[in-house]
Amino acid sequence: MKKETVKTLRAFLIELVIYAVLVVGYFFLVLHFLGEGLHQLEIRHRYTYAGVAILLMIGQAVVLQNVTTLLLRLIRRTQ
Amino acid sequence: MFFPISGAHISPIYLVIVGFVIGILGGFFGVGGSFIAGPALRAVGLDWNFAIGTDLAHIVGKSVVAVRQHRAFGNVDLKLGLIMAVGTIGGAEIGAQLIQMLKRAGNVNLVVSLVSIVVYLSISTFMIWESRKTLSQTRLPTGTVKGATAKHDPSAFKHVTSRIQRLKIFPMITLPVSGVTISLWIILLVAFVGGLFSGFLGGGAGYIRMPSMVYVLGIPTHLAVGTDLFEIIISASYGTFTHAVKGNVDILIALVMHTGAAIGAQIGAISTQYFAGPKIRLAFVPLPLIGAAIVIYTLVTGHKL
Image (tube, rainbow over all chains, first blue to last red; front, side):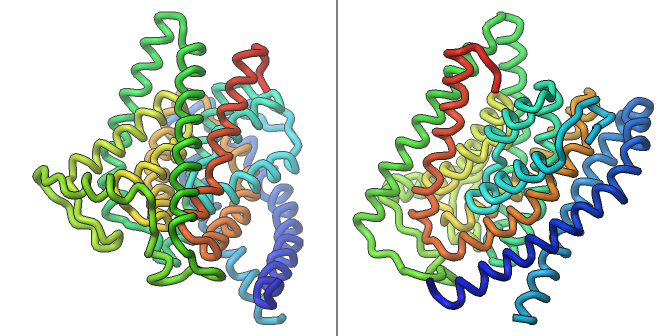
């Protein structure tokens, strides 16, 4: 295997481990508390819930992508 | 973990792993992966209506990540994606109406199952033939495929694509990013057919739109993958909204699944840089076959996965 490929694979593995720790924290700190509020919104205001659902999804996507990119950049710099 | 919206108890680790696998598939092939995500959610006891709606919400997030990644590599044709979104939404509505008609006739499950088997097997057979023929005719570069080399995308089906591109039906649209000039109506027709399958068979229908973009419109594979994902953001958002209004979306499940998909999509998108177009198309072949196998299984045994 090429040296560059090995380096990329190693960076991905380290990123996966750090990312897993962050995600576990996210589950307990954010989603756990968000659950009841979203449930109430879904029961009482369906249209608002639909809009909030899409915004939450896109917002999380953007934030997580930035986190993964930043992690990968930091890991590559330290290697 | 308890999800109050759908009232389901599902392990978050399971959801993250499912999301991760689908994220890799999406980032690499430009497909939503609904033919795997839907059954995977159903397998842990989620009702079909929640499985379909929640999967669509998760597809939105996953596609946003993959598109940002593909844009960084110059793999998204925004002009083409926006034009296609118009045709897709129209097709999806007609597909949904067809489902309603079949529902009223009482044979929706049988018809949809048979159509999906035929479609999945046809796509796989055609892509095996085309990509193998192209690979045997062309010497492809090894190692990372970037810049002009990535845009050079040989195809054994090129003569048919060129003939379609020569059809001068007003108005002609120039797509500088893809390097193609083609009739607006052909783009809309391809998008409409993709939307029709999306509305009829569910999910983003990337399994039919991505090959159509390559073989009918003549878009290079790398650009077809990125543009298809961009287009899926629009059509899946539309689908998420309507399903959420009907009470079919558990956004918490989608958010948990997406944490896995976010990193999977990044790995998938980066991996496309190491493969030439015909190799990506050949690797795509098992995906519709998996879909066909799941449908045959449920049709023959009557069981849901």
